[in-house]
Length: 182
Image (cartoon, rainbow, N blue to C red; front, side, top):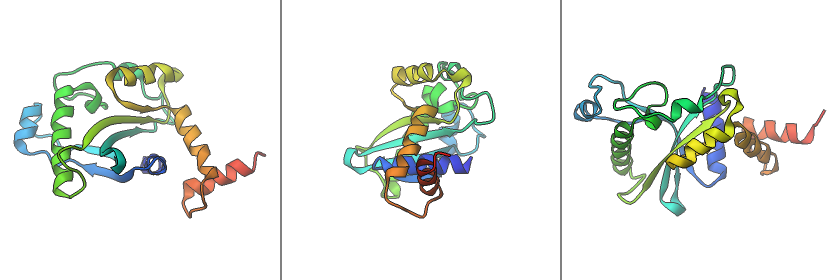
């Protein structure tokens, strides 16, 4: 999964974001009780992107699911009172509110955000169940989430072939594939 997260990190950087990968959110015991799961481990956000020009943070959940059935859009179109399943930030508003509140405080403490910084939720899906990419995009739009479907990720990855050379495995691969069609 780290490689796919690395790709998403790079694609966010290509769009003007500063990024952090595998960011742990430091929930307090009181916050965990407020969520309804007092013994839960610290939540981890796969990739955080900060866009200074917009003073915006995108908290990107990254799910490759390349050798599985894919991200099922129906699992994101649900709401739970306590965090349940693999898509907790998407399906539990209380959890999302508390995690994002703490994330903002953590980032302010690190000097990486301020009280006005907007935080948005995003999903990068390497594969979507039954290839229902439009439906996944629709669920994201209805909820105000940034959703990168497999087609979007492929398009953004192919565009790396047109960037300046960097000693980065994703850029090198995109350049090789872009120049050698055989």
